[in-house]
Length: 329
Image 1: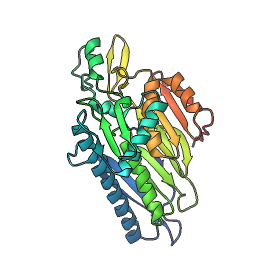
Image 2 (image 1 turned 120 degrees about the vertical axis):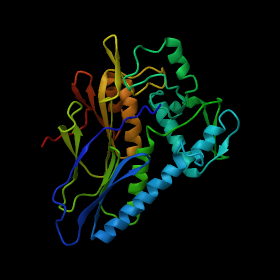
Image 3 (image 1 turned 45 degrees about the vertical axis):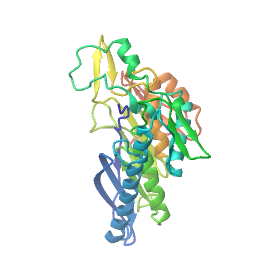
C-alpha cells in the first residue's frame, strides 16, 4: 500500500513579466501517474519550453528506473528476485536505496521502502464495516522490514532476503524526481524555478521581480484557504495528510497512511509538512512524522539540522518546529 499522500501547497507568484529579459514559464502535465507543474524563469518562450522539456525527460528517466509497476525497471527486477538472488543495479539506484535505508534507520522504521509488500487489508473507499483482525494486521506486514534489504557495495547489488518481499518508492520517488529535475535545470543554466511533483516542491532562485517564491500550506479542512505562507528559495517542502482517505471505528479515525512497523493506520495527526534542502528528504520525513505522531515527530525534527516542520493534529491544533519562521499575508 502506498502510505504516502501528497497534499500541499499553493504556489503564489508575483507579476510574471518584469523585464524584457526574464519571464516565468510553466507547464502542467501528468508524470509518474500524478500531476506535475514545472515552472522556470527564462528569456523567451522557446527557451522556457526547452528547459521544461529537459525536466520532463529527466523525470521520465527517473520513473523508468525506480517504478515498481514497470516490468522492465531495475526496481521490478529486484522485486522479482526477492529471496532468490542479488541483483546488480546502476550506481544511481544503489545510492538512492542506500539513502532510503539510512532514513529508515533514522526514523526507526516509520519510513520503509519495503512497505510495497504490505497486504491491502484496509479499505478507504467506504466498503469497510469493521476493523481487520489483529492477526490479519500482523500478517499484512510480515514481509516488511528495511533490515532485510541487503546492499553489497563492492558488487553493486541489492538483495531482498524474503520471498514475496518488495520495495517501492511511492513515499519518496516524486521528491527524488523533483530534486533530479532541479539539478539538471541548474546544470544547463536555469537560474530560478519550481518543480512541483504533485505537491512535492523544490525551488531555487527567485522570481523575476527579485522576490522569493511563496508557498502556502493549505487548510486541512478547506483546501481553498491557506493558514501559513512561507518564503522559499533553494528549499523543498512536502506535506502528508489524511484529508480525504480515512475510516472510523469506535470513535477513532484511522488514515490511509499505514505504519509499516505495525500494519495499523496512523492516527492523531491531520497533516505534516516538512521543509528541507531536498524534496527527497522532505518527502520521506513527511510520511515518517505523520506516522510518529505530534510529540515524537516534533521532537525528532527539532533534533535535525536544516529540517523544519508544521504539524496539524486531529483537533486542528498547529505545531511549528523550533526554528521555523512564518509569515502571514
